[in-house]
Length: 115
Image (tube, rainbow, N blue to C red; front, side, top):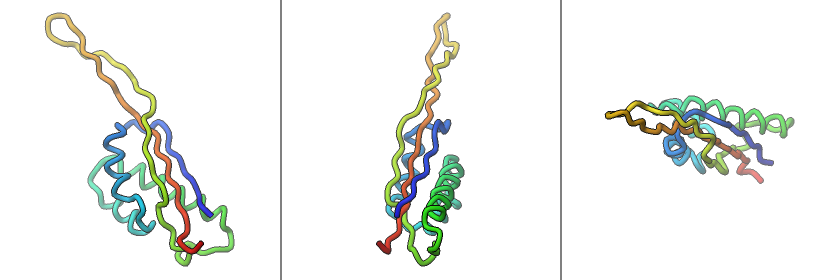
């Protein structure tokens, strides 16, 4: 039985978050956690917390089963664009440049390989 965890409005651009999501897609949960823990990219911390939340959600759904014996893996992970804050930056000759501060939504689905 699969479990889902969602992270909404994380203030990081979706492109930066997708680089990390591609690293852990389809991997075992232990390997994915180690990859995120030792990654130097700044979105790895909230993504690691989200993966731990998905594991806890799986534990809640499957009360009698053990996590280690279930061989959990990251079945699906995808990153969508979230809201965009639009700000203005002063520019030469009285102009203003638009700055788009992006955010994203991340969804992780973990599942057991012993189905």
